[in-house]
Length: 277
Image (tube, rainbow, N blue to C red; front, side):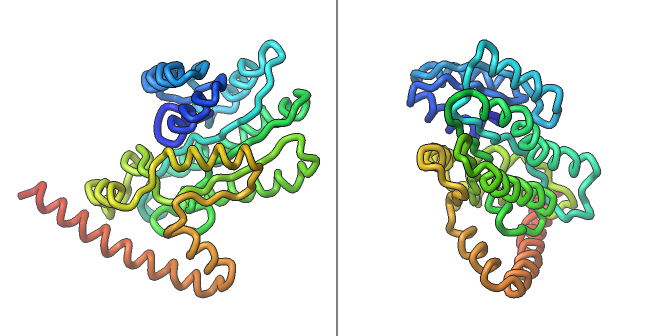
């Protein structure tokens, strides 16, 4: 379970604990990881913590060695770690781009690279759930790099599902809409367009809970679903429009970009005036 120290990862770890699972908790945030381990233990699970940067392939290789030590088997691998960055692509730094792709897409690829071959040889069926996003189904203006990385996660998962039709290892990709997690509030915002307080208010009003995504992860694992959309209110209509009429979807994306810049930019400007007053 990568990205286990907060949000969707934490909620899923606790759900697995209630099923009596041994849960390998993986995150870069050591302090929060210890707190989640205590909660997992209290829920009846057996936690093992690993402080790992998923964008580091050498660290992911060591993680796989540790998890599979002693002929252990993995029933469920959840590539969940993710970070975000908001703003127009032109305002992002090179480090923003590298970190966003490194964690969201390459981190998932490294997990697959080091775990999948061993899961195929372990002598019992396994399942891999990758966390993408609604932004992996529909391009979201002001989240271009994040959206590109999550589209990659969706495409990769569907390709692996086709490649491994023997069913020895199953594959699912979970695509949440707006979820009330730290990534929503803590993502850097470039270009001065976004008011963080506005994001917080929108999250409290519209966002679904991490627990709803955890339930979807468990359902995907239990029923071997391939693409699972969570909190579909805004995602599903746009996804279907994109599939049925790409030109209409592109026009809608342009309108969305204009609206977002006006709404978020206006809120950010008002927030700046309050600070300067």
